[in-house]
Image (cartoon, rainbow, N blue to C red; front, side, top):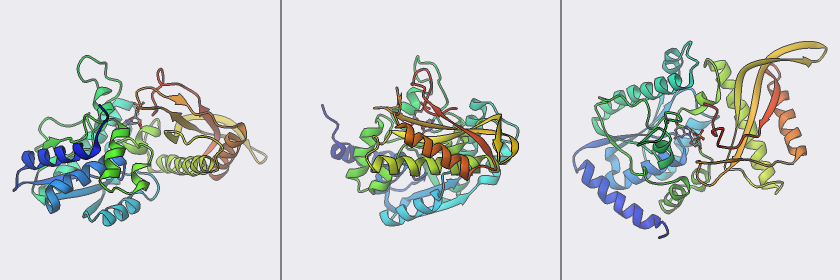
Length: 320
Ligand code: XMP
């Protein structure tokens, strides 16, 4: 039977009211992505002002993410608090390079920030926008753990809050239908997915504010160019498209001088449900323009741009 977003919203709203009761408060981490925004609007429908929405700026967000998210929540009439926590995330991750260790630390730190916020708002419940691929790939049941998805991995056993995940049985396209039905603006529900740990899984090696800034800028350029190219009809808009910064330095030439700098990867894929994916097919002229712009705007930091043409499997969409 086809998925019915209206029915889903009705059922979930009642279920949330039942679970949380009429007295308790709840907190949700809103990242500005489609999953958490949808979960927040759904929870807000059921709980009204008892829902406390918090945007944690981990230091791994995309360009203008906090400002844009605040504007969307204002439009939705949901109060949003922005917490700047970048320093504590970078401090906790100092010297850490192993992908699973990074994910665990980020997940745990996130929960700590939340616990603080939850205490301030006297919340007993934590809402999360976890969707089906998040927990399937985090090793539920008999499946191997591919990666600890942020919404799932790293949750300390005793976090002192009861977890509610209203979207956990949905796939991305179903979440988008729910979002549209709930009046979430198209800028959000048409947005490409963005992982919970943010740019941290796109900056391989040690995380520093400087290296994350390079990835942030490269991601912004990739988004802008790819959306413009798709808008001009040069190719179909991919499912997901972004840049990755590698800690791999190579020799280049800039002006008359030798350079030895890190590498940016452009990743763009099409897929139906994020379980498998195909590399996007871009015209060569487009790839040239994109690579030239990234290399030029970031010439002080990187000297090489490569395109990732790996299918999932064997690659995953994100690099960590
Ligand atoms: P992978 O990289 O596993 O990603 O092929 C599949 C989809 O999930 C996104 N992703 C995440 N989403 N929390 C999330 O909410 C996470 O920790 C996380 N890690 C990956 C990824 O961007 C892709 O859309």
